[in-house]
Length: 408
Image (cartoon, rainbow, N blue to C red; front, side, top):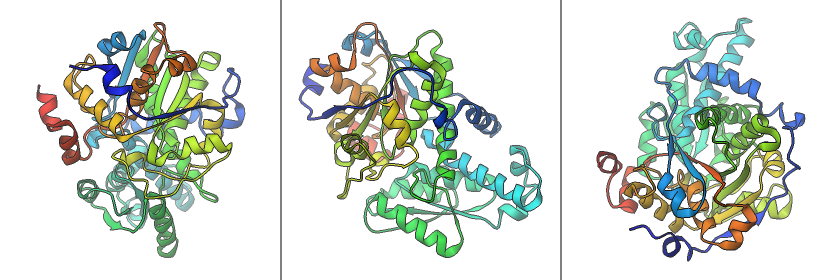
């Protein structure tokens, strides 16, 4: 039986306050980066793809009662386009945008999504190779998008990416290249090789001189936030616990809710693995700050040591707090969701449950609850950003396969 205090109170974790702007309208300065107007264009494109459907928003009422908050909602992204994660919204959308812009430059014609999907511009698309570095899910999305739109893909993975994630990427027809070092090393190797080979980089992180494509990736993520906001109806969220990584997902979610709700926007708490807490380090330093080392964590999708330079300004002004949690907290949250004791039986992957794990760690610490204002009136929203994208690791942690959990 789940025991919140005994299971989560002992985990060593860190929490620091952010320096958010005063609550008010979404700043105009950020609209060139992320906006509802660009989000509507992303939704129009993505909803035209075969298999598009809103992912479910699950009410975890038993967990809300156990933790003493009003409501807890879990946006379950495991079924997104059959790719297992929210990343399907970002990488593939950026591939589409890249090809659409290239077609416009080449022909002076502005293609529709249907034009590209139909193969009307196959001669142009087939001559393009897109490339990126990945911990797994982003590369899967880019490879899937490349196959869908008729171009080629070369995906770089670092040395600790699992064989299962490598195989999943290759299954979409991409060439997979394994590199030495960590995720950030693979980002640099992908950029170097792409420049030498005249490939097009479709990265989910930004760095000096490279910002346009990552912005499209982030805007694709906003489709998920838009769905969640509509699905919540009258349940206005007071808190969002969201995964960190390079910051693209967190910035997209924070920006969408800020623009939608203005002064009533929820507090956003960013949650990272303790081994790769580059956003927490950036908040402490007051500027984008890298963390080194091997960045090893079971939360593989969050094993990033360098913040995205376009995500950081939004996070700096829009995030209330930053948290670093141990792997054990994510593993315990996976088992809790699989048990059904939270109020629903859910298959949540290692990175996908990080936001919920951060919430559960927080509610076991009175000082943290007070700092974050978590109480019986709170409406907490988390994004289950992946399912069992590494089935072998999922079964090792949970004790049964994702299929077995879903069958119960």
